[in-house]
Length: 268
Picture 1 (cartoon, helix red, strand yellow):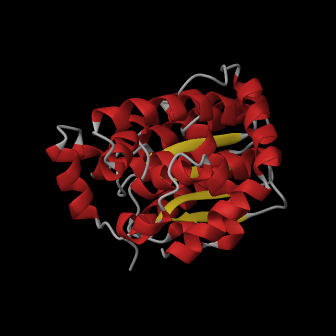
Picture 2: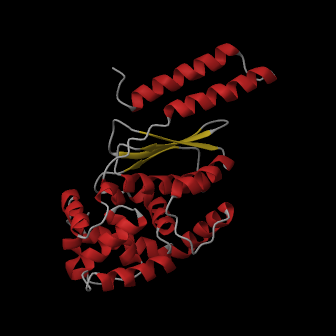
C-alpha cells in the first residue's frame, strides 16, 4: 500500500458512497438489524441471512494464507468458506466482503477474497471492500468512537486507529481507510508513516495499550465435520423423499472430503 493508492481508494469510495449506502441499508433491512448498531459478532448475525439467500457458511483453515474466503454459487446451493488460518480480524472482514458478493452478484462466480498485506489494492474488489468497511464500522458509531479514542490517546493518531481496530475487530488498514473515508483524519503528511506499520509493530502497539493482541492470531476453527454431518442428514431426508439415491449422496460426500483435503493442503 502507498499513499497514492490510498488516495485512489478514498476517491473511489467517495464517488460511490451514496450507492454503497443504499446497499448497506438494504442488507440491514434484510437482517432486521438497526443501522445504528455495531456488528460486533458479524457471523452470528449474517449466517441466517445468507442461508435465506441460499448460502451455507463454514469456517475452516486453508493452506493458502493469502485467501480470506472462497465464495461459490452452484446450481442449487452457494457456499462461503472463511479461512480461519488468518488473523481473526481478517476473517471478519472476509465474511463481510463475501456478503457483498452473495447479496449483490454481478454474474455467476467463483470468487476469492485475497488478504495479503495489500489486499485493498485489487481494484476489481473495491466495492466489496468498501461495503465490508461500512458494514463493520457504521458511520455514526465510528465517528463517535473516533472522538472517544482520540481523547483517550491524547490526540495521537496511531493509538486512535489501533483502538478503533480493536473495538471493531477489523484489520488495521481497514480502520485507517475508514478514518480517511469519513475525513476524520486529513494529515496526509504522515500517511506513509501510518501505512508502513507491520504486523509485529501493530501487535506491540495493541499490547502497549492493554488491548487484545490475540485478534491478530488465527482461530483455526474448523466446521468441516459439522458441515458433512449436515449434508448427510439432508441427503438422508432427500433419499427418503425420493429425490436422491444412495450412490449420489455417497459420491457427493467423497467429493466434499477431497475438496476439504485440497483446501487444507493435504492432497499430494
